[in-house]
Amino acid sequence: AQTVTQSQPEMSVQEAETVTLSCTYDTSENNYYLFWYKQPPSRQMILVIRQEAYKQQNATENRFSVNFQKAAKSFSLKISDSQLGDTAMYFCASRNSGNTPLVFGKGTRLSVIA
Amino acid sequence: EPEVTQTPSHQVTQMGQEVILRCVPISNHLYFYWYRQILGQKVEFLVSFYNNEISEKSEIFDDQFSVERPDGSNFTLKIRSTKLEDSAMYFCASSRDIAYEQYFGPGTRLTVT
Image (tube, each protein chain N blue to C red):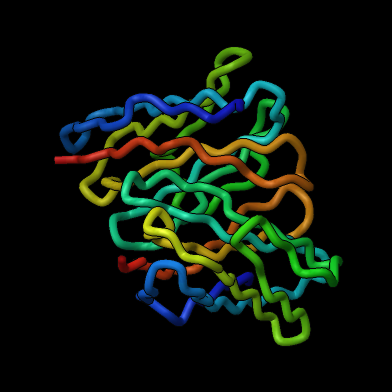
């Protein structure tokens, strides 16, 4: 079965600093997708970034980037120049290829401190 | 930018009552999903839907649950006889294609008393 593990329940970072959120996953498939979703206090799920497993290049979206280590099954999220609006729960998720559901980790609560 | 919408934002119901949660997926999307998140816990998959039929369902999605796409725009989740443990945030999601990401709606908070 597919599993996603986020080992950091809570983290904090000073405004303008950089923070890295950890995620490991397990799947028996060779083709899969990885995602980070942000859930602010409004509880809406917002896609932050995605990575296709077949791509070696790490995905980046403005201040957000990932460190994808396929052999280690690790998919960490780096947030640069942290802003107060980045305060939220962050969920790592994976999905096998095909019409398959997302499997989520338990989340990391990130607080950005002024 | 197109987005997934859900109504109502908050539903309070009594145990044993039927509820219908509504979703309007993004218009050119073909794959639809329901997830739920019990307060303080992770998001869990309930069911996926494509071409007017269920593609996959989790063990949570028992006989009390059903989904329907009654017209070209709405996608509904029905819980026939609600239980206290059904209290959760319910998210609808849609995807244009199986290779693309799933976009989530804002969620419906269901409270069963």
